Image (cartoon, rainbow, N blue to C red):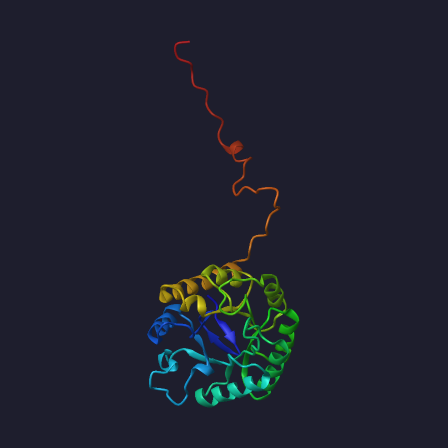
Length: 270
């Protein structure tokens, strides 16, 4: 399958995975490896940067994976920028998943503060991957601000409700000049496949894997679904037929005429 390219860097997986909600760090590590993901996101608020090497979450992230710090918990642009700078100083990466979610009930991204933070972070040399509402106009503004991707939500964070924003995501994909990563709300592997079939460049999954009865197996399932969806998109979807009529997959006429004429057998005892 073709690589995902973000800011000039190629990744051979189109599944991004988060590190929250796992029952244990060991389970998280096994699931990350099973997913085949090359990018893993971690909330800076969950990391004790003074305790690295002493059982912190980052100690269980396989070193070959690309770390994507996120600003989860930030309620405005100023707080998001401070968290991003803290993450860069601690990890050495300019990558940041921008999240500004002031509403604790829905965790909906604030479009105004997200755009403001994106402009500030891009100017400060960050490679910004912004989590945002599925709004085609906002997506265009974020791309114009210099963001490396657009990350529209499928449904509320952690809701496992699937692709509730399908039509809007389809519009974002159609107009985007940077990769579109569907983030938040995907609950089962078929949701990931659906997003990829729409033309999304990648998906990010956390809760659906972390809270599954068997997270490692669920991670593998999401990996396969992401691949299947991408291949389906690249193959080109057949045009849907009318809702009131079927279309046979094999011809119902014509082929019988090509068969040789049956030879008449003599009647015995007539």
